[in-house]
Length: 508
Image 1: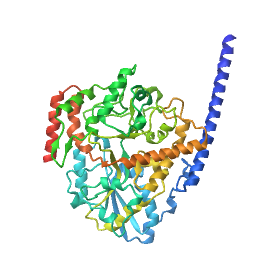
Image 2: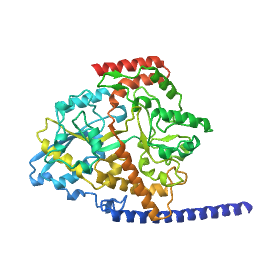
Image 3: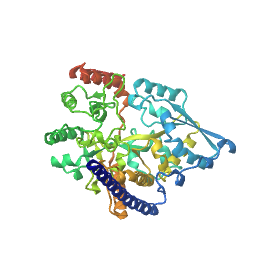
């Protein structure tokens, strides 16, 4: 009988807690929805109902697209892009549907190339792609990451797009983050237009940085050397095993830092400084799930990170690499505006030379062999000039961590993404590192506005395009790192081998 009473009391307690939680969620839902309504009233380009495709004014209905064959189209524009980019709609869905409404007389023909795995893209695949470009050139080449200009005669292959940007049918550079266009140049020539860019940002664990006396709010960037030094300081105060970063591993040194210079022919691998760093990094614990395999760079459990898998934990991380976590760059916008957040808002990672880099996530080039180069420029300019956020294509576009270079679209894009993910920000389950609660719609709207301003400041600070060749890393660097990581090769032999391979690559 006593046991029954205990069961009944526990059941009633659970019911009360459930009701209280639901009431709290309902209040936060109301605050968020009111703040959302307030924001979209001030900006007509924001999505009216985030997450509801049926009510989205920015979505182009397939029934509205005129079939080019029905209007007797006379021009054909061929666009070459990766099969992954085509499948997820980064170009096909987000831009071309709009262009087809604008120019139904133009037939867009998509051709694709296959990349087995972007993380394992190697020299052989890059060579095959370059051969494909030369043998059967399209009008437009969409090249997010895969072809390095290091071994290409780019002037003979691609148009200098500055001639179009500043020509009679050009654009007003004031409407764009023009410093990104300038930083994407090779010399004085621009051979690709980065419509979307990634930024390499990181989040600070508030508790650990407070304990070691580092003022996060006055930090605008952090180098790899600083990261390691802070890790050692924090490790002395942390009772358990501290991890540096959620995706940190032995490859980080060669992925983030410049290890060769094509212009001078120098390679900076077999040096005392590199030897010391490699040993130091090898001793830093890495999270479970990262493996060194002979045929792959590493294995990442992409869906295991704080906020999604609480059993994995997050209090033992010094950093969160926000560019590696789906949604994290957006939901952590509000960190500085709410004391309950576990991590800071994003700041830039910088290299030892002080460069604040960005990655050309969605770029386009025009082939010199194109017979439709003026039409190709019209298409690229049209894509550049879109200002509405197109948030419907966000999750399916593969551009969750990238930002437009069009200033108006950037503001609309970031606003929309924050609001789209606002559900996660204020309604995430207890313990998630991004859970926050706001007291009013005004407070929510202010936090969102401040978040947009912060991300605008981040993108204004970038000054160099990151052109590290992943194919070079996978083919010429990783094989020896694998041998070192698995104890099959000494550090000295590893550095000698990588130095020699890179020197041969540069001078061949």
